Image (cartoon, rainbow, N blue to C red; front, top):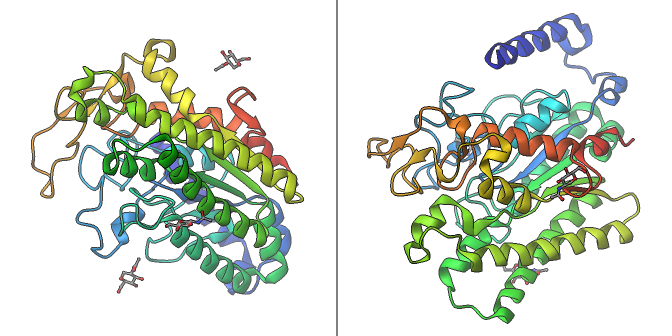
Length: 372
Ligand SMILES: *[C@@H]1O[C@H](CO)[C@@H](O)[C@H](O)[C@H]1NC(C)=O
Ligand SMILES: *[C@@H]1O[C@H](CO)[C@@H](O)[C@H](O)[C@H]1NC(C)=O
Ligand SMILES: *[C@@H]1O[C@H](CO)[C@@H](O)[C@H](O)[C@H]1NC(C)=O
């Protein structure tokens, strides 16, 4: 059913474009058209990457999720999304009645009036995290290019208005902490705090720049229960299958800083509104109590090799290494060692979109879209 809706939507968009004579002549389109919907700009890491890394021209040893079984559930081919199907931004776009956003780096023309997606698997806040990926400052510079194209396409005033009404959705930080944890396993609490402050400091600058460009509606999912990923259980056999608590604690520290910085920005910057989704506890609860949410398995992944199928999904560089794939990804919280299944993603997206304030606060994304 779902597979039918997407092409149908594309057909409808084509058809509407055909009926709009102004669109044909490449003249600036009437402003009213852009008042009728709001754009979505997505920034982030693998949790939100719709395939940007494929277009990085070999600066990565191997772009991820470009082999089967990635994409099998919905797209029926790998798209670069690290899941069996859709990821959270795909669902948020659907709920906001926007088309699925294409990767920003995808060659060809783009409808930036709907927004776009800059997220890059492996990316962090800090440029030194997994170099070669699109770190957050590079994503911001791409966003500045988009602003320029929008000004050209629809004029300064309409572009300004579009950026003001748009929602900016973020998932970033996890990779900075994986790196820190791997490089400094015995960091002191003071070191940890300093590192978190550096990540949050850089992130705050990005948010202020977006605000300076007119952005007003920021939506975040916080850092996840990083120590409970199948890959982390696999990498720390000494923990006997338990979560790597020290890593999850680092994410928890980041999350406390993030919550307080967003609150501070709201009080300092007139008109700044935000939504903060408690991804850490929402996902953590699914991992601990999978059956409550309709899953059979919360610890091991659907795809990969090893005890928890913590790595190797999709094979090595040639895509031929041995790995296992479950028959029904919908029974699993995790699709691979670090990324959730489409079914989990839908549940999470519903919480981001219309979650109650104990999980998504002070606004949910639906409310951000509804604001002027
Ligand atoms: C990749 O290469 C193409 C062709 O040379 C170029 O147009 C594009 O901008 C490059 N992409 C990136 C992300 O550098
Ligand atoms: C941003 O990160 C860099 C390291 O990449 C650090 O030197 C700098 O102090 C950070 N900036 C802020 C405002 O925290
Ligand atoms: C949040 O509130 C909902 C409904 O009010 C409740 O069912 C749920 O258990 C609460 N979740 C948490 C994590 O407190």
